[in-house]
Structures are given as structure tokens and as C-alpha cells.
Length: 445
Ligand code: BGC
Image (cartoon, rainbow, N blue to C red; front, top):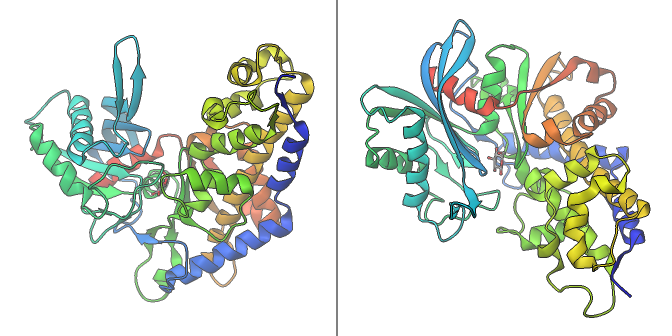
């Protein structure tokens, strides 16, 4: 008998990803508790809540600025021109951190433990150089979106606390990344570029959204990684001025994991950290899906490869294709191509398997959306003054929110479930590439 997919295993997993309203409320209150603990410096809070040393823009920032975006997948540098509240891009360069191009014999990966800090930062500086067309004379202000937890003492300084999203370049944690970038810019002759600001991508998105919308109170990155930043109102009330805070909400840990989540965490670079991120973000959704499919593949000994997970290796993009396709077996080429070597030659995907796999992708994405919604509802409640929720906007950046079928509506409906009538006061807006633009604004503030 060839190996088969046991759809019963998939159905049980789907059940374990369900997040009804009672569990959702518990996540919301646990997050609220950690938000409040984080503000009062309680070290039991799983939220780092890092101040950003910058406030929202006025919308009148103008001039030319370089924006450097380093988030874990690509490095992008853009030269922006801001005038009269509008922005144009006058120079640009971007490259992925990992790339395999067999035809041209290129195979590089700047994310691994084998990469030195100098190699990584020279790679980044080179992209900046390309974006300014190699100009080493004209002076440029640079705003840097650095999408990792970093402790700051001022706007042009950021000490990396820990890598996330499976990056493991040694010798950078605990260092001021601006100093490392500065040295690399000098090495490639870019003494004319001044690093004015370094901000998290949540803060950059918040700034970018606030440039044209004065009702924005929070920004969420929902893509390869996950995190939320907000304007912390409590700080203002207690006498200090209101601050922008990077919550590092991907590190929220008071969650119920399934066995599949535990597997993802165990196999990650840093087990026990970034638990919410590992349940919701694009970097990990495919792995969760893979783990369930691997558990559902049954066969006689010798028929099922021992390295099943690494052979299957589904990604969030595979899941989004699966969700966007209809119900005709021919539309599931990618799925079938990954399953065929594992399930043997006689294998073909039937309607029952397709329905089960689609249901699984839906359940994983829906849980992801509902968890994100619960944390956002908590942020809104936390920042309400005397219990009154004001009309406000939450900005989103990231491919899962923008492209994964069903995710944006699921966030909306879970927030409405949690906020009731107040849900109507909350606008959710998608701002793709907001994080780069926000860095340019920050450099001009
Ligand atoms: C990082 C955050 C970042 C988020 C989204 C997480 O892995 O810890 O700092 O905002 O990814 O890019």
C-alpha cells in the first residue's frame, strides 16, 4: 500500500486551531494584563514595550531622505523626495538576504551563523550606495527601519536585544547597530550619509500612516514577522509626554500552544521566544501547515521518508495559493508536486484531501487573524481614556494581512466580536511599504 493522507488527523488539528469567543477574550485580557504590567515595569510581562524616542510627524516634513529597510527577508534602500504632503521615489535598490540563482551560480545567505557582522553590514551599505547612484559627495539624511527588538537611548542609536525571524548572524546582539552600519558606510566611501534615525518597522508604519491621517493610534506588522507599535497614552497621563512604543508583541507568551506550535518552536533558532509570532506570522504559518500534513501522512515502514517535514516544506505562499484556488484538483499543482515524492507515484490528490488541506490552511490563518485581533483590541482598550474608545485608525503593513485570502476580514470580524458597538469606531487600513516611507519621514523630523 502506498502512503496516504489521513484526513481524520487533519480534521482533529483543525479543531485544535479553533479559537472561540471565550478563548479569544482570555487572550485579550492576558495581553491587556501584560500591557499594563509592561507600562509599570513589571518584569513578569512578556511585552518588552520599547520606547522609540520619536513622536508622530506634523505632515509638513519636506526634503530628500534615504530610507533603509532591513526586516529579515529583503534589504531595501529608497531615496524619497517629500513635498507638500506627497512623496516620490527618486532612487532605489533592493536585494533579498537569501538568494539562490542556479543559472548565474549565485547562492548567498546573509542570515546564518556563518555570516560575519562585517559581511552583513557591507551588503546593506552596498544597497544604500546603489540607491544613491554611487554618489559619495552629496549629503544625505538616512532613516533606518530596523525590524528587530532594539533598546534605544536616543533616536540615532539602537542596541539589538536579540535577533528574530530565524536570523542568527553572530556578534550583533548587544551591539549598537547604527555604529556597525556607520562603519560599513565609511568602508564603502559613503561618509556623506548621516544616520539620523533608527526605528522599528511598527513605529515607521505608525509615522507613515500619521503623515496623512491624524487618527492613527497603532500600527501592526503582519507579514514575515509580527509586532505592534502604538502611541502610549498612559505615559502622557502620568506626567511624561506621550511616547511611541514598540510593544514587541510577537514575544507575547501567555498563549495555549497546540502540539504543532510546540514543534515549530522546538525546531526554531530560539525556542521559547516569540511565541505569538510563531503562531501568527508568515515566516511560520507554512511550517505549522507542514507539521500537520506530516502527521497526517500514513504508510508502511519504509514508505514514509524520515525527513518528511523538510521534504514537504510548505510556505505561507503555498497556503495562500491553496486558499485562492477553487476546488478543481488541477489547480493544486504546487501542493501535488510537493506531496507526490512523499506519497509515491500512484498518488493523486482527491477532492476529500483537497477539502481537508484547504480547511487546514483556513483554520491556521483564521486562528492567526483572531490572535492578532485580540491583541489589537487589548491595545485599543488599554489606550482608551476613562473607558471611552475614541474613533481611531490602526495601520497594517505586511504580506499576510495584504495577501493571505480571508485574513483581513477575519481580523475585522474578531475585533468587532471583542469590541461590540465600539468596533464601528475603528478603521483598519492597509499601508504596504509604509515602513520604508516612515523611515524617510523620521530622517526629516
Ligand atoms: C521583530 C519586531 C518586528 C517584527 C515585524 C519581529 O520578529 O521582533 O521587532 O517589528 O518582527 O517585522
